Every structure is written in structure tokens, then in C-alpha cells.
Amino acid sequence: MPPLSYRSPKTEVRESKIHGCGLFAKADIARGEIVAIKGGHIVDRETLRREIMPRLGPVEIQIDDDLFIAPVNADERDLSMLYSNHSCDPNIGLRGEITFVAMRNIHAGEELTHDWAMTDDDDYSVECNCGASNCRKTLTGKDWQRPEAQKKYAGYFSAYLAAKISNHSRAAGTELT
Image 1 (cartoon, rainbow, N blue to C red):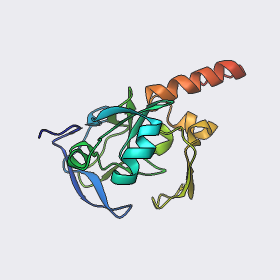
Image 2 (cartoon, rainbow, N blue to C red):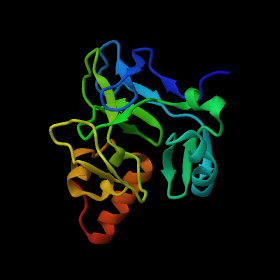
Image 3 (cartoon, helix red, strand yellow):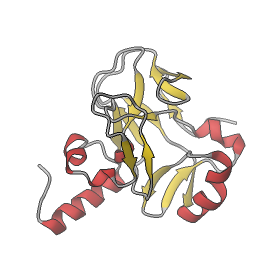
């Protein structure tokens, strides 16, 4: 079965100090270069929570309020995983909904990480283990609403969250600069 997701040939999956397996650069990656593209099936929140997450764990990328891209069975899990762990000091962000790009030049050997604030709008709170000097210590599914995150990740939020941020800014009369 062919992979559901794309990982650049400049990357490899190996053990991570952050969590389990991680995605690492095995060659230098230039700013703006595509690192990975998430693949899978489009599922709604109820299907994700009731059927997929109990069997496969966290495997999804959110693309709208009630829509996610995820594998739907165990055979597809590894074929869809990107292995990009969370970091409060990430080096990859999003272009569009599912395409991850380098936010800066990345050197061979670096772990490729993104901040869940770029993709998630959900109700959760978990302890962060990223180890970054600017670690928030606690991650929530609403971190995208933090003004400092909006400024830091401008241009790297998923299109779904970028639209939410724009709509909230217009409604509040405070466009991001």
C-alpha cells in the first residue's frame, strides 16, 4: 500500500527526546521548502473521537471546525503519520491546510517540530515536554487565540485557523500587523 502522507526525502523518522518517534532532517532544508504533507481520509469530529482515536491515538490534523484528516484503520496509521512532534519553538509551520514547510533554514540532524497552536482548535489541556527555553509548560487546544502566538506564527497557521484569526481580528477591530 502506498503512503498516505508525504515526507521529504531529506527527512527520516527516528527516536525523539521530545516524544516517541520524531521527524528529523537528514540533510539541510531551506526556509519555505516542503517538509511533509499530511494525507488520510476526511472525517468528522464524532467519527474521530468515537471510532479512530480510541484505536489509533492522536493521528489527525484539523482542517475545519468539525473536519479532520486522519487514517481510519491500523493498516493506514503508519502510512499517514508525519511524526512531527510539538515544540513551543518550532521550525516548521503550515502552508494551506496540510502542507508543512520550513519556517527557517534547518540543518541536518535537527528534529522537525511544529506548534500545535498552528493546527488545533479543540478543548484539551496537556503538559508540554518539548524542552524549549520558551516552553509554555501547558498546551491547550485554544493556544492559537494567544496574541503572542498569532504574531509569532503569522503566515504559518493552517488556512483554517488563519481564517478564524482574521475573522476574530475583524470582529474585534484589531487586524494583525
